[in-house]
Amino acid sequence: MKPIIWKAALACSFGIALAAGPLYPQDAKKLRETVGTTVDTHQHVQKTLEAWADEQADLAARYRSAKAQVDYLEKRKAFEEKEVAALDEGIAELERRMVESVRLNDSLEDTLNAVMERLETWVGRDIPFLMEERSARLASVREQIARPDVTGAEKLRRVLEALQVEANYGNAADVSQERLKVGGEEIFADVIRIGRVSVFWRSPDGKRVGEFDRGKNEWVGLDDKYIRPVSEVREMVLRLRSTRILPLPLGRIEP
Image (cartoon, rainbow, N blue to C red; front, side, top):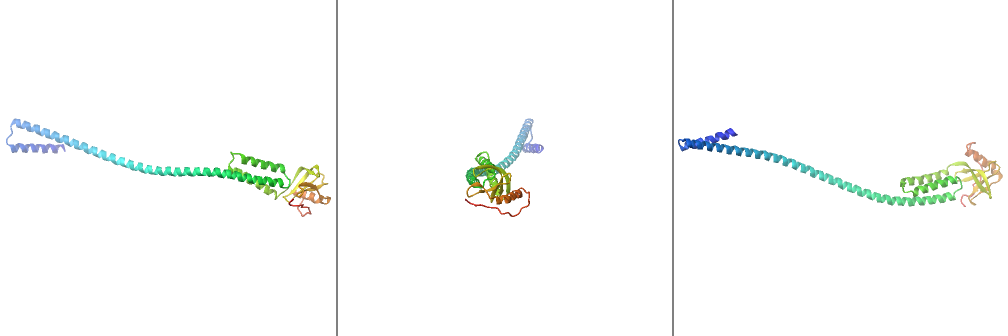
């Protein structure tokens, strides 16, 4: 650009000089000064224009970058606002569940305590067998229900387990050794339980047998004719002989 500007300035100057007629030394000097000033001015203007053009390009690039950054931040802001809204909904749901959990836990404990009361009443009225074991189990479950550090699920599991154990007693037969009161006399005897149908007792020497009378709610003796059948039932439960049908008294099922 500089040579072109220089030539254009000289051409303009010589054209003016030729049109004015012959040049004198002082005129030539002035002409040279004018041409030099013109060229310097054009060079300064050109540099300024180039600087402005560079600055404009830089500003345009910075504007595009800033606009892209603003667009990204707006999208990021919208995304994070959605995340915050989702988190707020999640927190609200958790708070609702916590309140509901506390309510259900209180309701569950009331229900479990009611079930335990009925179970304890049932055990108290049931035929007497393994009373220490059964009472200890119920007391342990009661203790678990009362503890605040035990979860509701664990409390429910323990109650269901106690119910299952009591239910299974109706499908099993066993022999245990216990102290009984028969007619005011305390004796040590084998207690033979046949599910929850009947519970018999047999003295260690095998000469006396009896049963638990549900109607009287006490242990009573049986006629000697039942000595052999009760002894055979005992052996069947202990798997000392094969099972067979035997004539045994059932007594009254309900008082």
